[in-house]
Image (tube, rainbow, N blue to C red; front, side):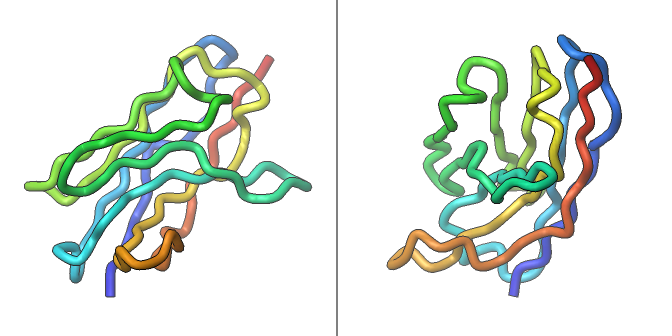
Length: 120
C-alpha cells in the first residue's frame, strides 16, 4: 500500500504561480512512476505530468508543457508540481497518483486531491 497526501492548492490570479506537493508513505520502494492528474467540473480526469521514480524522466501533457515542472525528492518521498503562468482553464482538482506495477500503465494509488482555482 502507498498513501499519498497532496498540499499546496489555492486561489491565484491568472499569470500567477502555485506549487503542489505530494507526500508518499508506505511501500514507496515499489513505486515506478508518480504522476499528477486533474479534473475540472463537468470534465473527465486528465493527465498533467509524470516522473519516473528512479530515473527522473518526465512527461507532460501538451496543455502544460513549458509552464509546469514536475520534480521528485526520493529521499523525502515527495513529488512536486511547480505551476507557472497559470490560466483560468487550469482550474481543477489536482490529484497525485502512484504507479507501482511496471507491467501496466495504470496508476493504482491516488491522493484525495487539492483544489486549484485560477481567477481571470
